[in-house]
Image 1 (cartoon, rainbow, N blue to C red):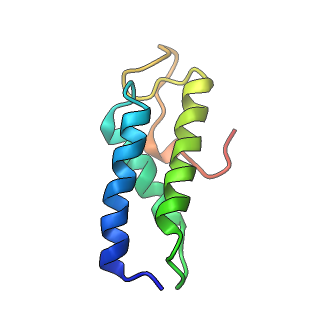
Image 2 (image 1 turned 90 degrees about the vertical axis):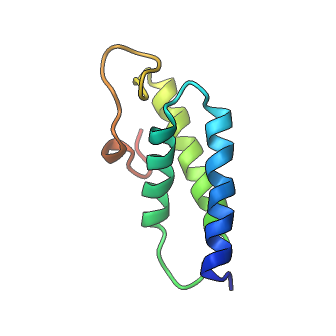
Length: 91
């Protein structure tokens, strides 16, 4: 079982990779996606939380960009996505 402080260190690393992958997305939006996903993952077994969070956040950000949704200053003038709109399995 992963210790909470170890999970926290892994989450710091998780934050860096999506920001590098999506340089056109405001870092606060990337951070919001990561925090939203992490808050949705509950339960006592935490071993794979960082991996699951990173994967789900990446998918959400990819979908937002593919849909032409503006992601904090990015791709489309039509409308901006907010962290509240980044729901699981949307799209």
